[in-house]
Length: 272
Image 1 (spheres, rainbow, N blue to C red):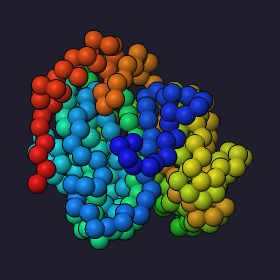
Image 2 (tube, one colour):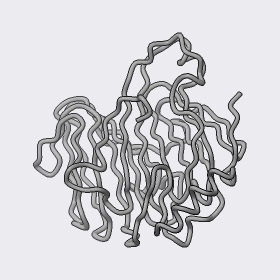
Image 3 (tube, rainbow, N blue to C red):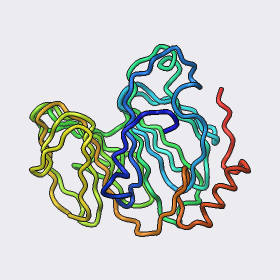
Image 4 (cartoon, one colour):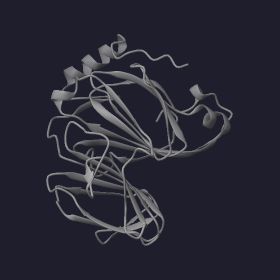
């Protein structure tokens, strides 16, 4: 993507999307250093009609946008942006990381929103590791960060337009956890690394497991140190038409989005 080598768990050869989740990108690299910040990462680009959400695992991401938001979120944190009627933003490694080099890892997923909400005002939320509610298993071998939704009586930071649960898992060896998912929701689990057994199925690094309205209990046991994310959401059930950086409900709306972006109606971002 734009010269960046990354893994794409979704879409894949089996499905284009799992409503309301449209895309998952996993970028794990070691930056070479000796770069200016504006030479690294992803430069200014517009979005409309959905929420791009970035989970930072190593390093840190400097977010700037045309609405005046300017923040750096370090590993363990999350940048949750609702693009709404249109916003232009950039996603760069923070300045010292671009200059000095080092490990850089993130996951970005695209979360659809209902048609009635697509043209609302954009919102950007920066969530640090320290601000993220965390559930810890009794033996301390499983830690679960809750970003949206409810998990084990803990509530996430972000309320979305439709019911969603977003979790990030850290497992030590032999860590084990069991929980329920609502029968009305579609659920994805992506294992960043390690090895685990999910409902008696062996799952290895970069595997994606999905449950479509199953309503089952989910049991995860790690055989080694592992990291994973869970995305679970109630299907929106509407037509999805996307083109590049825009996600709408019909081709006319896509043409309008392209026109508005070209005319600067989604804002202009000039990076410092």
